[in-house]
Image (cartoon, rainbow, N blue to C red; front, side, top):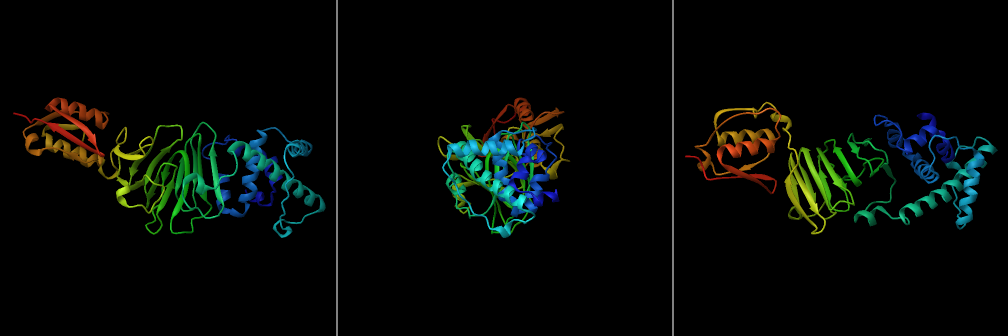
Length: 363
């Protein structure tokens, strides 16, 4: 990848491997371009604008000649006002007169085509602050759009890894150098955040802010959905309805593994619940939740609470006389609860991310 350090915008546009990456045609395991951007942040401007040109011209694997490029530029210039941009010569290596004119053509191409595509596709330029409602410093952000059909892996410079789902966009700085690690998400992604107590990790969406120190969680903030959500796999996550990580705790919720926060857009409020399929927590896989031999119901629920990390609320006095004999195989937590409650004459409901057991007791 190091030979790309000498590439101009035009070189990137003409490069087949680059176009494959822009069009989402590389395998999920190929993260070369994401890593290249992190290592060589000074190339971000050229890469970003070359990416827009490729998207605007809808190029794939075909060879694009210099004549074709000039033709496209002339066509676009006919529809656009004249744009002038000055780039200091010391920022570009001076190889030859031919290179100079090629670079000049590249600058003209990136300004006209890039600007044309961006205005047409986005309805004008919009800073991150206007989109997400937060103050974002004027710094370069890497923009990754997953236009493919499979999740794509994005590695951040702090060791965190983001699995970006199709039809989603992630924006992040080339390096985290402030008091927080802040990224911006539109769509859905799974985050595996490297732990750093001194630098909280923030995920900004239009609906809410998610704040963690180091954990695994999923954010679903697709604009077309009625609700948005955060689901926690491990660690502890704070979610604030306002796009403000410094909001008081009363304005948000704290989630632990198997809990989920749903932002109801119509009511602009957060609701804490459980994930659709709770999983065994990492440090409790040895807890027996398969075989129950004449075990008091209170002990059964204690095991489930430990194994899944979910709090159970119940009347121990009423349930002390209830016992259970059961053999489970691959049933989910909710399937287990359905069968257990049926056996002891109880019911359950999920309230504020907890499971409430209701029973009249056993004789």
